[in-house]
Image 1 (cartoon, rainbow, N blue to C red):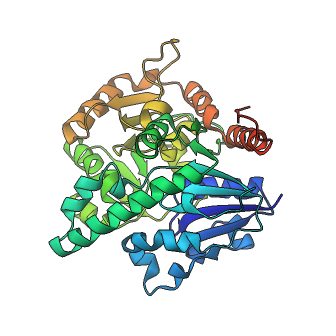
Image 2 (cartoon, one colour):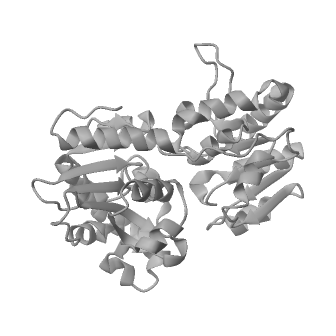
Amino acid sequence: MKVAILHPWFLMRGGGEKVVDVLAGMYPEADVYALFSNPEMLSPILQSRGVRASLLNDFPFASRLHRQLLPLYPMAVESFDLREYDLVISSCGPAMMGASVREDALHVCYCHTPQRSYWDLYPEHQLQLRPWLRHFFTMSAAWVRTWEFSAMQRVDHVIANSNYIADRVRTYFRRESVVIYPPVSMSTKPLAPANGDYYLTIGRLEKQKRVDILIQACNLLGRKLVIAGTGKEEEYLKSIAGPTIEFRGYVADDVIPDLYANCKAFIFAAVEDFGISPVEAQAYGRPVIAYGHGGSLETVRVNDPGGRPDTGILFPYQTVDSLVDALRRFERVEDRFRPESIQQHARKFDTQTFAESFTAFVNSAGKKEEPTLK
């Protein structure tokens, strides 16, 4: 079976890219396509395979301006010649569901999220633009939404990365989907014998990640916060950070495990579609303090009906005061969290579980049966 894997871009190392790494390992002969690709941002498995990038990748300053080129994505996706492939897996993201495949080929869309700026966050994004850009964005958004909706109807099967995303796929694309959680590599190191003296957050430093809330809360309480990651908000975040805030910048993969394993807790204030970093923290037995919305409701166990121990604390509002209250609540009960129980909870998101579920789904879909999970 000839397989193609499609992903919007390899310009950073995030959760979507980790999913593609696992898919590439599952299908070692598959060809990988992307709209944009920076060789320096490819994982070792993709560096050895190579990525076939679209013509948009040749635009001047493409890496920096890739989001501004979004109205051109449909044309770029449809330019891929995928006639030789029996199975096409689109890792969506914007536009990738619109790939043109053979009539008898199987197209499975693994949906990370409908593009927020064109769907649920459209009004907010529109208001942030300058007037002359707003007019262009309004016209292009209407066309892109119509095209994406039509394209999603042609996909054979949709897999959502969480129940939260399954609801959004139903709302915006009118498609039902099966939920298969993204893969998270479980820790093979022994659990840390004692809690560290710092809180930790890892991820891109972008506005929607709300790292500013984490910084301001730790400023107020005088708590040590280690921030790993880079992004457009880095300079602003440094300008509001107090003396207890430490920026690590880009952190190599071999350093991240120790950061996770030795932190007091992982803190997180973003609305994530799934959120791999909080699960990775739990894989090291560390509790998570997260904003109780989106994927966090599915990855952090709180008040379990079956009586299983909590794996973290959720705070109800995306505000500094709400996080401050959560940090104080955590510190009153932090000795009650059991690393072994937290790590056991994280195993439901293990890479092997993802691979088995995804393979079983594709195999049953390829037999023209109603796809089921293993």
